[in-house]
Image 1: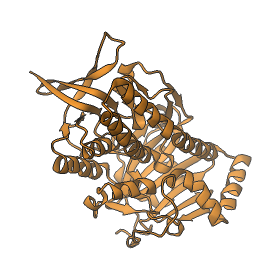
Image 2: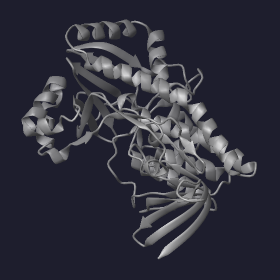
Image 3: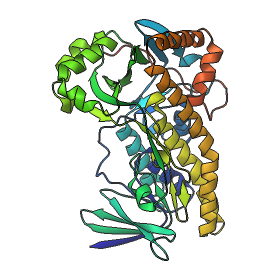
Amino acid sequence: MTTELTAEVCVVGGGPAGLTLAVELARRSVSVVVLEQSGHFNRSFRGESVSPDSVWLLDRLGVLNRLDGAYRQMHRMEIVDSGSTVLRADFRRFPYPHPYPVELAQPALLSALADLGQEEHPDHFTLVRRATANRLLRADGENGPVTGVVARTPEGEVTVRAALTVAADGRFSKVREMSGLPYTKLPLERDVVWLKLPFPADWDDRTYRIRIRGDQHGLFIPTHPDSVRVGFNIPKGGLKELRSLGLPALYERLDGLAPELAEAVRTEIRSWSDTSMLDIFTTLVPSWSMPGLVLTGDAAHTLTPILGQGVNHAIIDAVTLAPLVHDAFDGGGSEAALLRACQEFQRTREESVARSRRLQLRQERLFSLHGAGGVARRSLYRVVDRSQKLKQRVLAGAYFQLQTPGPHVVAAQSTATLV
């Protein structure tokens, strides 16, 4: 059976970029169909860190009040290098309306966005689940403008005809591949092994922890409601070698970074299936659009996990692109007008993304130093630690690109330790 749908915009991918964009378009009375591959949002995600600017945007969009109790404010960040604390940042001292990053499970965020679209804009918002895009529709042959998408579902094919198709299908974007838009994938020198453990009773639950020892480092992220996400670096392509050494090698790696977790990791991680591996790379796409198609989120600019920038830029992309697309449709919705809107979207966003990428890559290089380089790294962090102004300047590139300084509009959540 083949189902035919028509909309002004077809969004492929129901993640933070796709659903935020769809809600923002529907709010402006632009009809949108979202094709989401999964049948539900109850999947395991690593990208649960939401930066202060995105929290501010979610509040303005009316999403934050739908998430009461589903997220945790983070108040501090600390870096411990070779056993000494070399940098502390207290977000409560940052002079912005929303100063706090939050840890928010993506299933809760995506469900809230989908509910918002379906409940408040039912005439303009359509979500099709279990739909895998497998072909782009094109006018005038295989190299012509994109005019929609053909997707596979358990019930048969779904054809969505749209004036604009948006690729919001992530870092391994299938739509980007099908479009033929050129890109460069830049692998970094490490991958990250992720696992989840019970939260330690003697840690406070509002602090991001970064532990460094030599050229090894780990991220320790409090996770709602009572866990800690742990990510530690391995050499690029090094998972096979690590696994060949057995789980004791994993335990030993974590013992060096966080001995407090020694008992928990041995109790909870009993096989390699209790872990996952993230291939670390960044993607450079010279042109994010072509007639009838635009890339957004990770499909346009894959970033690394450092400072949790993936979700942040996905949401900012969405709220930047939506008004430009609306204005193009308001002016008649011609192919040329939509292409200009998409090109303006890239011009508006490209420098911000590049700034975050540069900050991430600097941190990646710092983390990899050892020996004399490690001594220099610790000295640098201590210099930053002594100056609140310098801390704000360094972190502003990641966390405060949109907000202007002003009084807090949210209170600090309780800092009670998890038990």
